[in-house]
Picture 1: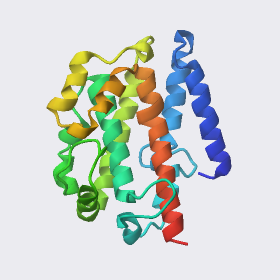
Picture 2: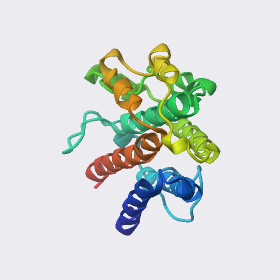
Picture 3: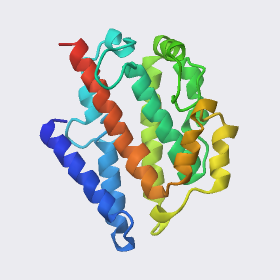
Picture 4: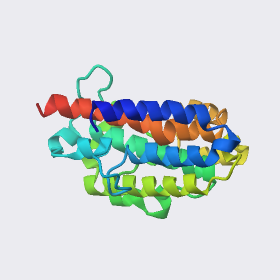
Length: 228
């Protein structure tokens, strides 16, 4: 994804924001959401014929770069491992538990064991020691397979949304699953309140798309600094 593609992605996100709550634009918003999402995942999720933001990040990415922690950049000290795991967890939690009301991809695929980690929360409010443990122990191949699984599941959820669903509020019973399933650290319970004030559109515009965009760009800046 070059600079022009980034500009196009931002323009697409602005357009999606403007039409997503208009019932007469449901099909168009649905298709645009899928397109915006695809641009942030490796081509394994959906081939677009162009390099995605994640494709650019993963190309020639060295393991030492993946696992460098802490890093020294203006906007993050966390490792690329943490960033990619965190965006996958946020998307899995919000789209499955809160939007679809279905089990997390994490649990269906037994991904925690496959990734060789013990953390099942969103990654918010982790200590330095916890991030260091996650970064060192992560199975990188399993992490990327988990991201693909999360991305494919999100696309199913978006495709299944019906006219009017973008305006749907998060159900209290779904919010309660966040604590029951250990999706948030106790220190990160503010996220439950934040997500509880969102509608489906808001969860698609941030956790499923913009949040990925932000953290992938942070990861690219880490890569560009360490692999000059």
